[in-house]
Length: 447
Image (cartoon, rainbow, N blue to C red):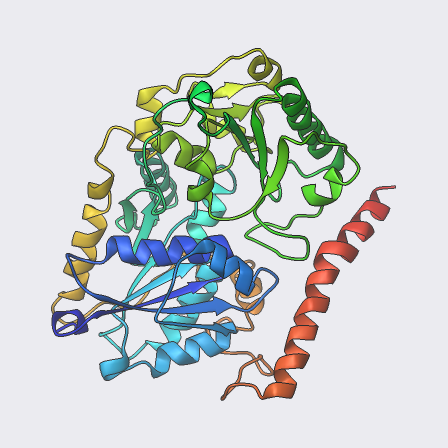
């Protein structure tokens, strides 16, 4: 009998960034069967994007326990979690290579266990690049969540196209959609808040100074042209912090060279709270566009830099949301195509709460499966991908059989005060190298 039948459902989430922690923790609460009480244990994978305390507070998702681990430490914890301490569900909220490494590592530590947890994985937002690569790296989980009907169809086509089992693909929706519907423009004559335009910036798109400077200049120009409006630049992280993607040219630095008007501001915080006061959401290709569309907020995906796969805005072809700053400055407001919106898992017309029913039913069925669960069976093995898989596993200090490599970083106990200081300093130096030194070296190489 699964633990969930007699006590709170025990769920573990392993995440490697702030946005993936948010996705993983909220997904865990959405897919838990019925009205089951949840005990949530969070594990943050140590690396360049490990969330800072500020980022965790901004995400606003809490857990019963939360600790930072290496891959080997996490695998050890999963192997030791037996009996009353065993987990019912494990959510892998990681980049594709991390998921693949954990599937092989977990397959080894659970090789003699039929009572293993149900393993769930998926994507934190819009899937617009590396579709086949990312999907095959996630293959082997019991559930591979697709955030929309369109993604579910694409995911199954990829798996079936390589002869892999596609039964794990499960249609859901983005777990962080919600909030009050947009009620219309504020009544400025009645003393309400000013009309608010929000540009949702992305850490890695666009990826060069010229294009990022252009977008900032257009945003500032819009603020000058409409002094009665509040124009906000919504940022994901502060300089020195990392999120899911590396940000080499933070807007905070670029804006120092500009001269923005008083009605222009930089803002941080929870995206949902920013959307509460948004009248027009503008972005290149951020998942924030889907959050905004879900709430019926006028939403624009910029075409200024072209509609290109490299920007991710090609995903919005057919949405009715593509427009340029020139058009926005003249008062244009795109109208979203309802059929396109429905296929993206954006339930603006209701039905969002039922979007996770299939996942809940499948997890309940797996938890009650007679004889437990079969071994994890990823598509990639030393037989199917002998030139690719070993490198993926080695990045997480695992050998081809999923066992820790000699010298792999792990700890048998919590580090002492001195070790904690050294670890923080080392991580700070690493992040400095990734964000400051590496980009300079790359630019020098382009000269």
